[in-house]
Image (cartoon, rainbow, N blue to C red; front, side, top):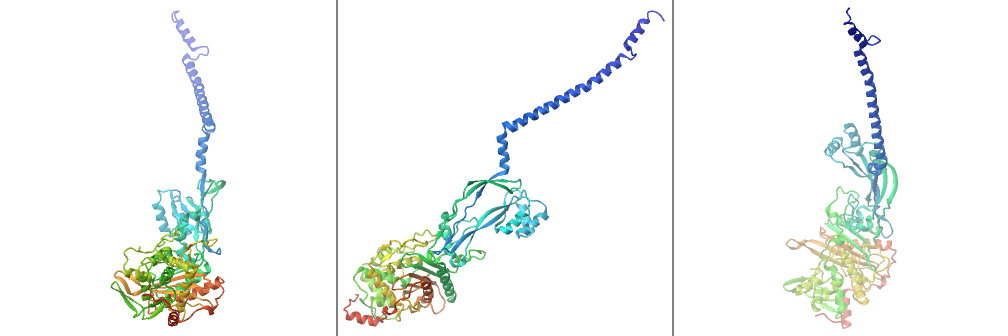
Length: 606
């Protein structure tokens, strides 16, 4: 081997190194050993960075954004709930309940949370008492909504059974439902509430704000399904509605309604109305209407039964207005109860109209005019006095004016102003045609007679003391008219069926032709009676009106007067009114009165 080749081999050996391995292999091994270190460092750096980010996020959430997140969490778990105020009771004068609120639960659901499993929905439908197919269809229609009623106003026991099924999306709200213990007996006066417990008719509507009260608020904790976990604290106390105490006496009301309903059925009448008023205070002791309805079950509710007819219905009163007109006549001072009127021949022409009595009564005193209910006598009297004499008295008695009770639909009636009146108009107004009144207005007007000439306004509510009222006539005039009315229920008057054993009764009958599309009808009547008891110290005024009784008996003295007899007798005993001294009643016949008047030189009405 030549010397020139030796260095090349040594270089080769040097490149292999002492181990004899090639230099290239050692470099590759170096790269292999460095790679894990680099990756490890990167991984450690990433982990540290992640931990740093996480720590920063924790600090941000716990410190910097804690209030916001706490609010968001509370919004999903904390709720402010409204606490319904208990609606005030309506009670009678003795505290007996007429309208009370009972606790109920309204079941509702979030359709988006309800299960889609037909088996669970079927179970829920059965618990609600609803056909499964119908219920599932209803749920499907509301699937994109967040609210639907399942069933409203459920009593607590069955409602809690539904809630205890723990079906997602089913919730309950505590509410109140109105219950009326007296049912149909006083339904129209009390009225009803709607499903949201707000007044819809009657006194429930008139005094809705007073009865409703104001709701409260509370803070509660609920789970994700909306179920109450904990009652946290009260925000605002609910204030219950006020108690409404009526003047009405429920015992008298029950009895009056029963008698009125029986009479309406007996005479196949369209309807009937009864109003009983305290003769001194104007408080309404009873107000019955037939037909009626059951406010606790409105499935078959008839519109005709909704009206509190004693307040809302105005009608031509007919002859029951004659004592009120006579009050004006005697107050004028020109005539006395003994003044004489010639009613022969039982009819007369006024402005081309024929005015008749049921028969020719001949000569009568003013008392006899009331006893026999003579239209001719009232016509002579009305035309003998200034034309506004009777109208002024009616107006002072608040006829044709709203009673201002705040009762929905209360009737004002009609009292035409006395401008350019014809003689016929003046005449008919004196015996109760051409005007319209409600039974309540009529009873209130009669307080002028029972209260020593002082009219007092009507009141549906119990009052602590007698109102001052307005003095319209002298006590003497009021007593004279009262005694005239007493003769109506005597042996010579048309109201003898109104008598009450043991008590002196004053009254007045009235029979009115009803107005139809073509004027006054020939076979449709309204039978009326106004009664006062007892005469010695009047305690009650009762107005009874039977609308369109069928059959031969349609006169007020035959239809309405017997109702008064039954109702007044029982009411006086319920009120502990002592019997009268019967010997004080003057039962002389109209002819005997005429004879006595002539002997005393009584004046005759021209």
